[in-house]
Length: 355
Image 1 (cartoon, rainbow, N blue to C red):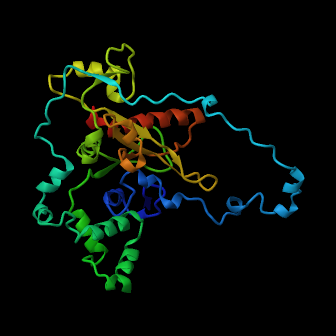
Image 2: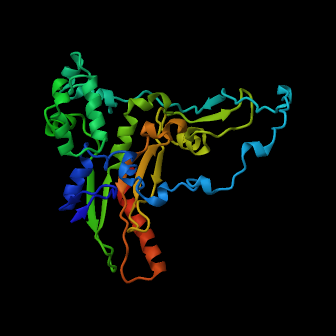
Image 3: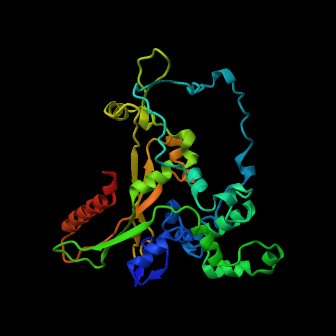
């Protein structure tokens, strides 16, 4: 049997194709954004006696002095507000000197997420007064969104829809299959794929299988998200404290020397998108199997850092689960070398479309 690469998921599968179908299933978080790594199943066991033990629970055994034994408190000394040092106010306005090769107008070759919705087969239903189609209204959309992110099983969702309270407050949702069909009718997201391979001359305990999505398609999906429109920068610039100042400042990606120099090599009116990769090899259990997962995430450097680093912005997208393998019959130092080579081999495979 094979298991989901998100080790927080306990599902078993017959083959890699079934795992790819599971990762692409929008009713699960394993192939979605970073919530796949922060599953409730990773929480500590609340029944662990060591996790709930209060070091001061036997306070009656401690010889602590009473408040009467401490005596009266010394009088407070008034503080002179003028004597308290204050931090200088933060500067909020700066001068930007943009690159002379400014980005031109957006071409008509691509479409943002809203335009994609306007072009699909159900656009007329959304334009007829129900922007939440294929759901009846916003309340029903919020209900489906909650059920989709709550890690409920199909049986639990069906049981919920059969409750007397739900029947007393009817919705257009008939079953979990109906919900899934409606979700699948929405514009598609970058699909998952897999490849199983061997390392010539070496044996591993388990097959080496890598699961990934096309990073270029994921970048396009991030770029088409209208949420990032107000906070994405396409023109490199030099940042100064004020007009006429020679003190160069470096903050965002587009304020750096690389962005300025790279823009100088592009054709007039063109721009570029910076790519950020993030790795998070996460231990799931310690002392009970030492299970680990190695997700690879991607984001756009043009998005303001303050927005990009917020988990609620979903500016980092999951593009791959790197394999964690153990080579057989090799020394420890050879184990490290082989894992490093395998790591770069996988990245070369995944990031091929970006080269």
